[in-house]
Length: 201
Image 1 (spheres, helix red, strand yellow):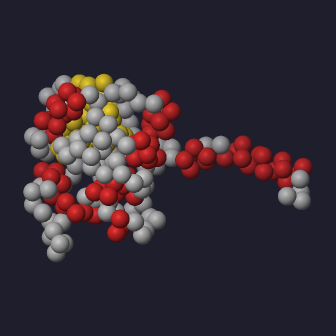
Image 2 (image 1 turned 60 degrees about the horizontal axis):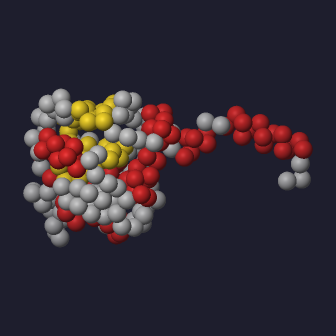
């Protein structure tokens, strides 16, 4: 998993509340077990019409937001079913950070396991960030995980809280497999010892 330390990028405003996982990645795309390739179908039913043509008014289809790396969203983002494909699609599109007033618990935890930083801030702060995101590609936000701050294009700074262990994992680029592999020497030593002590196992 790629390390997340400091990100400066385009932020897209998506003020809708209760954006659920089926809106993020519709169930028709859940057949794959690969993490890659889902970005093109992110927000599929909002991005495309029935003929598969882009809907120009949808924020991520607008030229100034095609390279979005930060999403400023409405309340209760990621609610609904607990599909891990939702953060897969977000990450594959290129979004590395989602900011909202609240997240569904399972989606929130899945973000960290897939290299995405979900940030919870008060409504007043999200309102400021939403306005800043509306400026388009010329307005770039900075997310600093080490210092736990989000800074607008005008220099206004907001501090956010994050679990220390989850922060460590993102900073070091450790998903569940990476955490296990960090102890590979101990695991190998244990297996070698067990092979000597219990050769019948």
